[in-house]
Structures are given as structure tokens and as C-alpha cells.
Image (tube, rainbow over all chains, first blue to last red; front, side, top):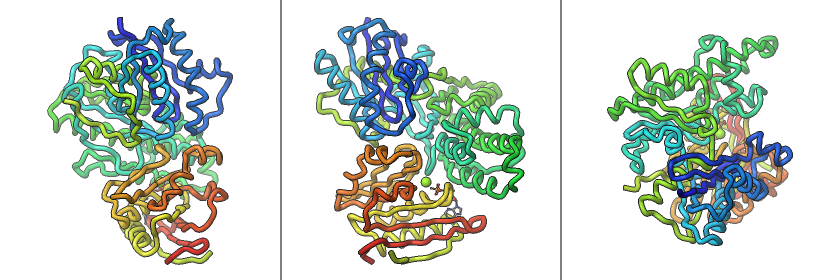
Length: 340
Length: 149
Ligand SMILES: Nc1ncnc2c1ncn2[C@@H]1O[C@H](COP(=O)(O)OP(=O)(O)O)[C@@H](O)[C@H]1O
Ligand SMILES: [Mg+2]
């Protein structure tokens, strides 16, 4: 049995996981998880690379403990090489190299976006490409044609703000809190999503690209025009965010299915933090049922950033004989490329 | 401090054009540009234009999440930063932003830079965007200390 360690520090969370070569998750620890918080004694969220330095050792410890393993049992070390914030990537990379070097274990750098594609494999090992993937998060909005594992074509992406970024910005602007995704999703439940009509940008332009900055500005303008009483009207604010969510989800669903038609594929995989959004899940499934298309969503803990998906992706490349050397460096703008 | 430009823009395209103009007329390697203004007012749109004016061909995307995006052309680098998500000065310093500033050949542009303006010693450019009507925006450009022109 092979044990694969997966490390991801591409953004704010420190993530470490261990899987085996049957894609079974033995542990999956993320620094923002409440269980981890409890062990660590409470964390004030902070956007800083040096936070990884503080959390990584305990996240690693916890991952080993949960898996009932020691570092000696790890057979392969995988780590996110990019894209992401350089300072943060460096710390994950440094940990990975140290473990690999000290224990004389093979090392593999993984593309974070490709990692998101592999998340689905941990729960649906039977899924076989080709499929169209939609990766949506705070930093990503990408439609990718997965012709095969390792063979990708970027079909479309955002030209300005990512989908999750629009959620966060609007939520903060309306003083609803952070993170905006789950908050707006929750508030929108049962609200009137047709009370306001927002264009989601590039809706009918024929491309598979997105633009969420116009939607963001439209919601800001709409709110600013409200009277003082209206601004305090909780129902109205719920309708406002529900209408925003309706537009955002509509354009995500429409473009993903358009991509599917263009490619002639019959499966869709959704990943990234926004894939946890209930309205998106519902609308995708509905449309899929209508068209006889299977739509796969990872479970919530595998939608958001995690080390397990990095390990799964690394395992695939390792099995193909790929190895990385000690002088591997993080690349903040690492592009998603095909390997075959 | 002196004001070097004041415009009204009626569209996204016009704002981008103004950005292009700013880049060509005023900005030089080593410069720091702070872009201030409310959410959704058009800061990133303006930076798209500035980048074009600086000869960058890639699409400029919002760095709110990634915190910094680097665009290269030869040995010139455009550092596009965004402090929207940052709450503390330490977070800014942790970004390694002093290194970006030390690149004499690069230009640093910071959206929401006004949040931590005490961290910037002049000289720098300060672009302020504000809402007018529906698609109307006001663009004011200031220069703090010995900016070239
Ligand atoms: N005159 C204008 N100048 C700039 N943007 C405009 C203008 N009129 C409308 N817009 C729209 O406003 C939005 C500005 O978004 P963005 O540049 O992301 O804002 P910010 O970066 O300030 O949050 C874009 O969708 C753009 O199309
Ligand atoms: Mg912006």
C-alpha cells in the first residue's frame, strides 16, 4: 500500500492530507477547519503567508495523527507548485522538500487547478474523461475540457473578477459578513430571486468567458439607489442577494452546458469553493436531468482547497513515471498544461 | 501635491483609454501608482488601460484574491496589487511588497492602496475614481512630490 502526502498552501489555508493508492482519504486537514481551530486554540483569520509557517507543522501533525501514520510511512510527497501567492507557495514547497529530502522520498509538484479536477476522483473513482469541468472559487472561474486525465483545454475563464470574488465583495459591501458564498446562498434560500434583474455580463456573447465585475457594480449601484428605509429592509436585501445569485449561477450553468454541447461530451464535473453553493448545485443538476447529462460535484470538503486533491493528482503523475527535482520552484502563474 | 489630470468618463472603454493615456504620458519605471475609489467604480478597468499603455498584451484580471499579479514584458514588470482583502499593515508587509517597490525597472499599481497610505513614502501617483451617474465616473490624478511629468 502506497501513502501519498499532499500539501497545498496556494492561498490562505494551510492544507495537508494523506491518501493511499486506492484513492482512499486517510486524513484531510485544513487550517480554517473548526476541528483544527479547536486543537490550535482559535485563529483570527488573517491573509498572510507567514501564517502558513505558524500552522503548517500542526496541520501536518494532525494529518499524520488522523491517518495513524508517521512520516516514515509516507511514500510520495506532493505539493502545489502554483498558481497562487508566491510567499505562501514557498512555505508549502519548503515543507515538502524537507520531508522528501530527509526521508529520501520522491517529490512531485502539482498544478492547483489540475488538483481541483482530481478532487472528483477521490469519490467517484469510476469517472472517466472526457468531461467538461467548471472550476469556480474566489480566485478561479474556468471552463476546461478534460479530454483525458492529463489532457486539458482551457475553454473559457473570467476577464476580471472571479465568481467567488463577486460573492465576497457583495457580501462585504452589504455588511453581511465573510465568506460571502455561504452567507448569500443561505440568505437567498426562499427569497424572491426575480425581484431585481441583473445582467451577468457576457451572457450571450458566444464565448465561454465570464465577466463578473459588471454584475458586482450593478448590485452596488442598485443598493446605493435604495432609500434609507429600504436599506434596512431585511427581506429586500435577501431578494437583492438572491437576484444577484440567480444571475451569477445562470451564467455559470449556461456557459458550462454550452461548452458541453460544443465539445459533444456528456458529463460535467464542478469543483472549487463555489461548487459548494446549493443554488449552483441545484441548477446544474436540474439542467443535467433535463438533458440527460451526468453532473458530478465533490462533497463540500473536497470542493474547497485541500491536500487530498493534490495527492490524487500527484499520484496520477507519479504512476506515469514523472518526478520533480530538488530545485523545483513555485510558480505563482503556473499554467494548466497537458502532459501527454 | 499637485493635480495633473481631471476627467469625466462615460464608459468602461473611455476609462480604459484614460488609463492608457496616463501610462504613456506620466508613468515611468520605478513609479508607484495608488488607485483609490469605491467598490465597482472601475479601478480594475482603469488598470486594464494602464497595462495596455505600458505594452502589456495579457488580459489584466482582478488581483483581489491573488493579492498580486505580475505581468512581464522583456525586463519590465507591472506589479498589480490589491489591498481589498487586507486588514493589517503586517499583512501588506508580509506580501513582500517592499521587494516589488525595489524593482527599479518595474511599475507598481495598488488598488485600494489608500487603505494603508501611511506605508507609502512619496513620490507616488494617486488616482481617485468616483461615481457620477449610471456609467459616469470622475477620474482625478494627483502627483505627490517630485513626480516627473
Ligand atoms: N465609465 C466607466 N468606467 C469604468 N467602468 C465602468 C464605467 N461605466 C460602467 N462601468 C462598469 O463598472 C465596472 C467596474 O468594475 P471594476 O473595474 O472591477 O471595479 P473596481 O475594480 O473599482 O471594483 C465594470 O463592469 C465596468 O463595465
Ligand atoms: Mg478591482
